[in-house]
Image 1: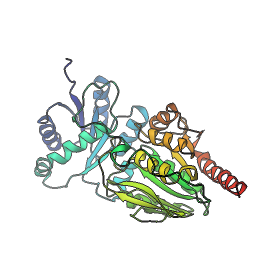
Image 2: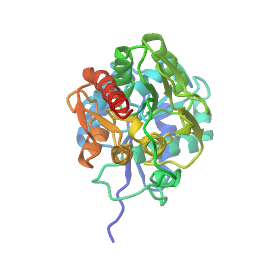
Image 3: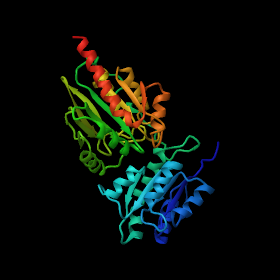
Image 4: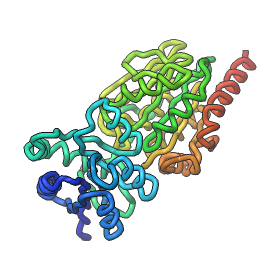
Length: 366
């Protein structure tokens, strides 16, 4: 039996105290190997020597700030990043920006009593590192941090709809995104007309940030954008953003559709999960749906998009050249679940064109 490789963690923080305490906290966890760097330039040298599995990154540092380094990591060699900074907090602009730039998790540390906080919050930090490693596990790794299985949408929704879905004039758009998705959604929503079909979106983002993200999109979009609440109607000209740490599903109530916000385990290593949303839309809306998968690491949404296509939905994937990370779209394309591959500037047009074609089909059946 092969020995399990240790999980390599690189701590990048200009505070010697923080580096010391974080090293002590993470090193006590079985299977973790820790290296440190006082700033991003030193970190780049260490990454070249031995690529880490996860980076724990501060934002305030000399020579290069954490956000700039995060952008460099995501674009040049995507490594899961956990932000641990005094500047971040639920809903803060810089915390949201870090997530928009591709951070997987955000841990807020105080400006004072940092040593005590890190010791007391060891479980939070360890769980954040574990979550980051699981979210974007690389095929070359031969170990698992937890014996729990990688769950599919079956863990939340049964795999078969209860009854066939009839065609209606209402269209539901289901969208899923991860790394790079915040900017992709901004571009798509700004291009959407006020009579765009109702949308439900899963953007991988921790709890406490999705409401601020929705508010930011609402200020720049031609449609209404809000964080989804259980029972919200899916209506023309509105996009509902799935809240962090809960799954969002779509239910049919007569001829109308609404969102359900529910608890459940991590699915495809995420909560909310794109696979869960897509399966629910396949079951409730079927041929009345349009599925869109955008930039992001991993494969969340790939199985669900195939289910949508098989249920009669029209499906779209963002192309490689406009994706920050082509993982999720590539997985969906490889599974055969994509009808159309489009560059980011054309996705809004493709959605509206697909809606027009669906409405023509319904009119022709009358």
